[in-house]
Image (cartoon, rainbow, N blue to C red):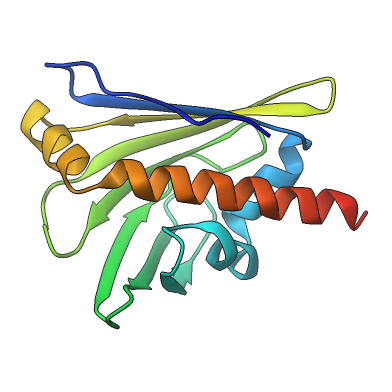
Length: 160
């Protein structure tokens, strides 16, 4: 439906991401919490993903593995903080190949008149950690993921 905005201000250990979707917030929440849906949109195009664990509750752990086009695994993990709901999700996020560099990720779903703005606020332990994440090519992954999520929620909404 729209463009993905990504803001990473110099010297600030934070990334802000937002995008508007033509869907109710419950559909977006379900896409974030249903393993069968999550694998259909999260990650760059051409990457295969498996959900190893998705315990969607306060204190619950999550872990998934993405396989690049050469078949190399890239595992990510974290924990939910607070009870995930259509209001939002708060979780930690860690790339297992770079252990100890955890960031806090808050996702909100702001619905108005049948459209929902997804906002993601990622707060890092340091500017260096944030810069490393940006330099890893995260922008391509975010752009692809948000476009794929837009396609998925359009399919889910049309199926109703």
